[in-house]
Amino acid sequence: MITVLYEVLAEQKAVRERSELIEKNTTLLMQTMERLDKKLESLPYEIRTIDLKSIESMVAKNTAEIKKILEEQPRSVTKVRKYLLFPEHQGAVFYDIMMKWIFYIVIASFAYVLLRELVDKLA
Image (cartoon, rainbow, N blue to C red):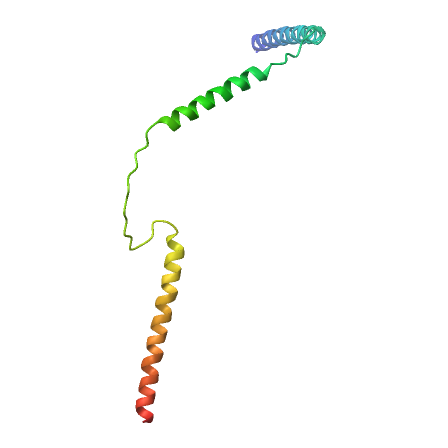
């Protein structure tokens, strides 16, 4: 039982020594970081300005050349004739209009038949 206590005390002492070493190392690291931060703050630095005029002139010249090249290229013209029963674009608008007109035609036909039967019965 006593040997177990000695072993626990020895492990506790070893853990304490390791934690002290870790604490010393962290304080040293913090001090060196603070020194480096101070050195970095004291270093002079320059903000360089870039002359963009030359770059802008090169870009403008090259875009003009590209436009010229594109305008000089021959263009192929293909004529396409399409007879569409249903539209390629905006189909929802087309179907909305068509459904309304079909509804109107059905109602008008139904009203015509009813009125014709009414006139035949009255005559």
